[in-house]
Image: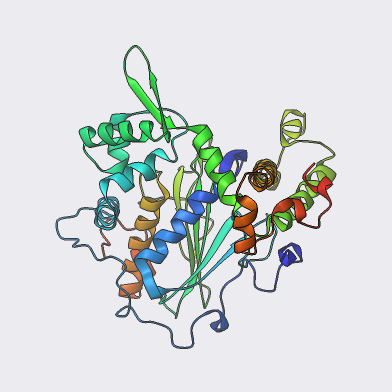
Length: 157
Length: 227
């Protein structure tokens, strides 16, 4: 079925997530760009966004990366991090996974993006809290320059 | 203004390059995104809740939670999600009902709360009506809608969903965006009408002249665009 399970995109939740990143990271947020249609180019125009791409710095192994964020009205979300040099990971919630072997709240780890591990981030709404959890686990990895700390319950910053 | 509909730029959806980052990237010492004492905190979720409490008031958290509640919830559930006491949740929800932001539903067993759908809709329409690029946005969403109707040979995403065809994951993504675009189009049309109505209010002319803002009826556009 896919992310969102066919429900509409939640533009306000995307906006709240970016605001949370900006508030927490300050100058660590280098740039914010948005897509306004499904296949649109990332940029800064008027209107409700379908997807956000936030350039954050520093990074885990290199200088920084893109954090791409989407939310759907059924509560599904995806936080996809891609760093210079090819390191990537993704946290997601996908309701439709309930009828599969994959966990609803899952983590695609670096070096094995097809794997669906149980996510360390529990609960769902609101986007502010989920974003703070993503920041916390990413920051633990950034501080230690070690992506193995991602999605680790005991890898506190 | 609407060139985001052109083919994706190289690198879109890809990894960043050095050009995407500042000339002098920050180090972990330059940023402190988690200014909360993590001592005694057991896991990342508890930590996130503490960080959220640190950066917001109880009222802000209750508003953030109830804003996303479309299926009615109890005050206990709202309190849990907002990391506040149940008494605090009840009191703030009561205030939000008075403000027209929240609706209360009494059942025989308990009281349930959700965001007021009309308030939520009007908020979005009001926000769009402030935009100076309303016409550009309407054109953008109309173009997107026509790609879906042409691709699927159907007038609505529901028509595709009830058909016999088995939808792929990509097609479900199309359905999500199609629904979103339909809703955006409805909001944008309402925003356009709201501006029209405002332009006819007494005193509006003087106000717009003084701020040199153009009122929508004088906008040089083909009005069929909002049909």
